[in-house]
Image 1 (cartoon, one colour):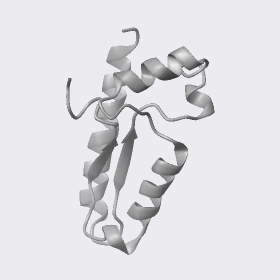
Image 2 (cartoon, one colour; image 1 turned 90 degrees about the vertical axis):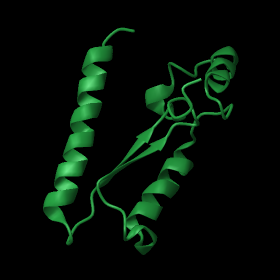
Image 3 (cartoon, rainbow, N blue to C red; image 1 turned 180 degrees about the horizontal axis):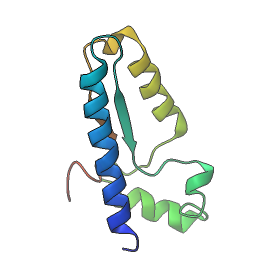
Image 4 (tube, rainbow, N blue to C red; image 1 turned 30 degrees about the vertical axis):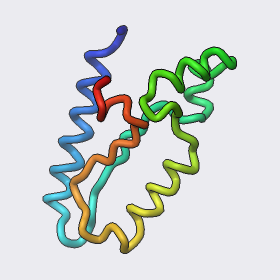
Length: 103
């Protein structure tokens, strides 16, 4: 997997930043992050450019789907709302099971 080390390092840095800023800025500001799997956006268009690739991507994920932008937007809305007032320093994985289940 090319560039895996740089991707892993940057993801670890973001996680550390979220936790550090969450602690530093509490209780005034909450800091959280979303870690989405493949999402149907222009950025992922090369991964989802034909029906076979879409089917393969669905099969890779235990929930047999990948994300739609609205799903991520809904998580953002939740995190900005008072419903998440007790959450800070968290990384919210929206992975359709691909990382969580380790199948």
